[in-house]
Length: 249
Length: 249
Image (cartoon, rainbow over all chains, first blue to last red; front, side):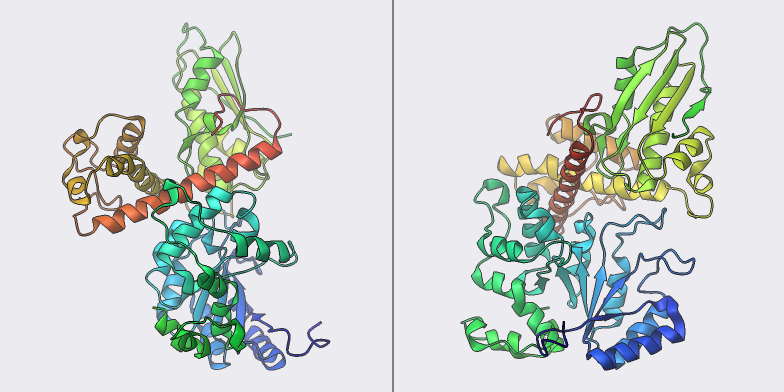
């Protein structure tokens, strides 16, 4: 599909630190072929008898370091419901905390914000300038099905993480994005005392979450008419990911 | 067919009349989902509960999904077994977890008093005490929000809260629950104990640290209640009959 529509897709790739030298070689080939700037990792995935890994494992650091050398900027980490390993808390985001500190020039987007343990994610993300909230499943799974819960989760994320560090995700293939996009554009924090101490989300914030934040992370040139119409906005939008991460701190 | 948990209770007391099903259900009120910090009864996890004239108790449990975390499921089945066998007049207890991918391992592991690691031979390397304590600490944080929010709404200042002891707060169900959870963790829970403590260390929270502490408490409660609502929703979709002692929320 990407070959049919050149310039319309950005390809992310992947690695598995347990794949050794062959895995590093595959990563190099993928980055060369697709020009990737980001990758997606599943730390709870099983592989050859291993029941998952941590980003802080020495092999993972080797891969993160190699990815950085290849020009990768954005590490999307799946942290959400999984079954195995049986005795571990597979939602644990502590490894992201350490990796984000040790790789300050990489951005870590925690997909599904560690659901159902958003508190652990929020406490961690608030301390790390290069950790972002990926809203995949949050919007698709909660906005319509559990509107009150959705409002509270959004309120907590807006408070702890902030609208500059939240990224829309559609879970495309599980469901289609149109209804999510339309629903989120229309969404407002309920006007109820229960939600009174949560930050509000305005049009600018929605624009950031829907695309401008991702554009900054991936160095996408945003057409002038879609940029935020206030002074200083170009610093966020036109900058490189590192600058963005620093200014968003 | 799942293998049932059956064993003679250690404290069988001959001559004691068997308890009624209502009494067994009341004992199960003390068994909580460790993650949600709610009784398995009100959550709707108890499918059925019977006691024979000879004192043989049979309890069937169910969970919101086939894939609910096996570590939490194990704790609930083991706790239910302990609660039922501790009742005077129970000659034999049988606790069966139904419709779960790990039913067999959990049911037979609990029956054999094997512990989690032996029940999941080769798939788990640590027992679940640490997990339970982690979630008790979360329960303490969530309970702090439940107790403090009404106080703040009634005009208490953060400085005022920092100076309060548990004995200063009017008795309520959330307060009793907070005390119980603190006591379970070995944290101060008496009348003269500070109302606000760090659940990891037991140290009092000072005025400066208090706004953040309360914000964390709110986030933890939001997360806990949201998870509870998701679990209830999934249970309702899975089973069309209410559980024994289930409470709507």
